[in-house]
Structure formats: C-alpha cells, structure tokens
Length: 166
Image (tube, rainbow, N blue to C red; front, side):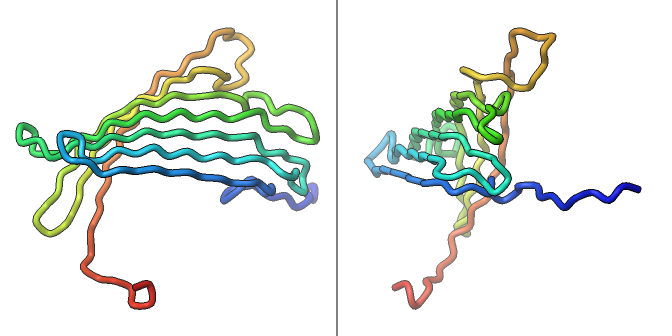
C-alpha cells in the first residue's frame, strides 16, 4: 500500500484569517407585533490558508418579526426573511467552481410557551437560490433549488444568574 502524505479536512473553520463584523438591532413594541429585529454579518478574507485556500466574502442579512400570542392558534407567530451571499473562493489563486452564490430564505414559525418556562418553536423555511450553481453538472445548463427546512426548537429559561456577571 502506498504511503499517503498527511492532510487535513476543514471542519470547524476554513483555516483562514478573516475579518468578521456583525450588527444587530432588535426592538420590543406593543402588539400585535411585539418584537422585530434586523441582524447582519460580514466575513471578509484577509489571508489565504497555509494550503492555498482563500475564503470568499460572505454577507448575511436577516429580518425577524414576532407577534404576541394569538388565541386562535394558542401560539405566537414568527415571520423571517434572510439573504445570504457568498463570493468566489479560490485555491492557489484559481477560482473554486460553484463557490459563488446567493440565497433568499423566507419562512415562518410558531412559538408556544408552557407554565414551566419551556419554549417550543416549530419553523418552516423555504430557501430560494438566486444566483450560483449547486454542483458542477455539465449536462444540466439550468440548475434550480427546491427545498423546505423544518426545525423544532426547545428553549428553557432557568431562574439562575451567574454571580460574577451581575
């Protein structure tokens, strides 16, 4: 068997230096929309990895609305919209195929709360590919994305404060 050189797969990060910036604005109101917010993030590549990989410029903008509890469905309604953009990444100054693209994701969710401070959230998101390719399939000239994401979240509020943070 041939001896293979050691190599590494990126999992937690891309192994590059990046400048990260984030801005969030959230506001609490009185009903029917009791909470809304805007969050944005940017990731800008500063230096290639030791293996010649250059991360793409990435942008992420999200808008969130939350209603008060509606008696008809016994839950609060969340409405979401997100735009994500990824620029072109490179390996040794050669553009990586299928690395550039943008996605718009609208969605909604229902949030229930229980008497013991447990929050249950069911979300449905519908990503739409705006630009970019999904994979290098030369035989298919027009590629499309049809997807739906369903998630279930649980959140528990504890009656505890960390002493040194007070």
